[in-house]
View 1 (spheres, rainbow, N blue to C red):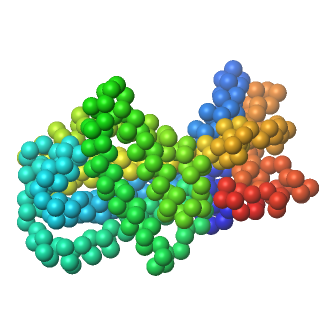
View 2 (view 1 turned 180 degrees about the horizontal axis):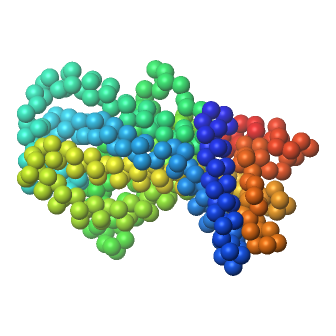
View 3 (view 1 turned 135 degrees about the horizontal axis):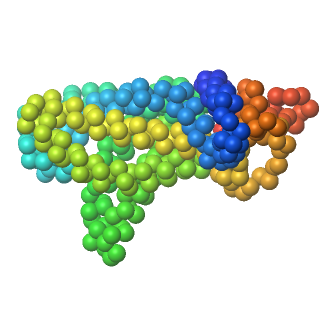
Amino acid sequence: MTGAGGGGESAEAAAMARAVVALGWLPPRLSRPAAKFLSQWPGRILIKSAAAFMRIEMFDRSMTIAAQFFTSVIPILILTATLTGSGNADRIADAMGMTDSSLSIIQQTAQGVDSAAYSIVGTVIVFASATSLSRALTRAFAVIWAVPRPKSKLGSVWRWLAVVLVLAFALVFVHGLSERASVLPPREVWPFAVTLTCDLAVAVFVPWVLLSGTVTPRLLAPGALIFALVMLAARPASAAWLPRALDNSADRYGSIGVAFTCLAWLYVAAFLFLGTAVVGQVIATDRGGIGDWIRHGHHAGEKNDDSHSESAPFATQGNGHAPESAPTKPWWRGGGPSTTGRPGRPNPAEKDITGRPG
């Protein structure tokens, strides 16, 4: 892989080096179990995820995505409510958990817009500006997966619009579908199943489309599944907090208060969306058995010498302390054992996660 991969290598190597140094300061009775934990699958995922969070600047990028979502998707929802009537405004407000006071502000916004002007000029402007969200997500996922960002060209416009529309309508219709599913027996199961399926589909579709299929749905599935599971807990928490927060903000500060509360809510959602994608990327590219199964559909069965395996940085010496050095390259960038006879050089016959020769 090229492009964004260089930053991933340095961040991951730095995180491993810091972990090794930290183990060296521990007494033998603590360094041994700590090194064992870090050399196993949960420890590897933890270290690599922390490195990836620093590499992509998670907090800043999440705020960028939240702001772009607010300025891209919310206007589309208001446009839809304006063109189709107040009934859809009620549905949108219900999906976002708005109470009467905050709902009245949305209704006033929708009623205060000239639908004739909005349908001609405003629609073009809204959808054109909404593509900024798709471009921001493209940059984020390209960095997460360390792949070249697809070139911005006229043929990519449909991808940007498709992602914006999917996110906009998922915000509204997932809530409605779960309510309709609640009448089916068993009533406690179907709403969760519908929500889980929709969130899983969105989390796979968005990066797959934005990256032009460079990363396959099979590799995207772990992060998407984690996101869907996390949202099963986040949605009830949001339903309990958001209506009260919106109501208080509307009473105290009016429309600006509602806007800032929505932005805070979107920041949490963006953080979860990108964070689970990072963890999913780490799991999919891990060299353990789970990563092999995700990439190839079966366990590759490769057994490497301890000195070349990913757990080597955390192997303890005879005195119980960790070694002083850590590998400078992850295995998918040519580090570790080489099948070409030259250390650190990838085998041209092997392929990386994108399907291109290493």
